[in-house]
Length: 190
Image (cartoon, rainbow, N blue to C red; front, side, top):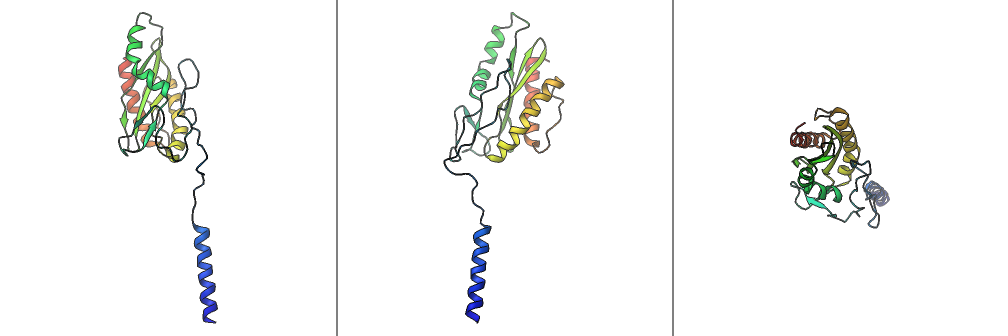
C-alpha cells in the first residue's frame, strides 16, 4: 500500500511539474515583424527595422545600447542617414524659408536604452516627429514602444512643443522622448 501511494504521489508531482513548465511561445524559425513607428515629412511610412528572428542580436542600421552592451537598438536606416546629414541639408535649404528642415535631438540614455527624436519643421511649425533610436531589445520593449511612439509623435505635432503627456506604461521611453524632443526644438529655435 505504501508503494502504491508513493508511486501515485510521484506520478502526480511529475505531471504537475511537466504541465507547469513554461515553454517559449515562439519557434526558432518564426519571424517578428516590427511595426511602423513613425511618419516621414512627405507622409510616407518610415522604414522600420527588418524582421528579426529571436536569435538575432543586431540589425542593419542599429546602434549599441549603452546599458546592456550586447543588445542592439534597431533604428530606421533611412532616418539614421538623414539625421547625419540633417545639418548639411538644413544649411543648403536655408535659402528657402518654406522648405522643410529636420532636426535631430540628443540621444537620451534611459534605463532600457537610448531614445532619440527627429522633428521636421516647415514654416516655423513642427510637421512631423519620428524616433531615430528607441529601446527595441526584447518583445516587451517592442510591445511598449510600438504603442507609445506613434502616440508621442502625434502629440508633438498637435502641441507644437515638448509640453506633451507621457504615455502610461512607457514612462522611461516618454521621459527620454521628451528630453530629446526639447533638444531638437532648441536646435530649431522654436
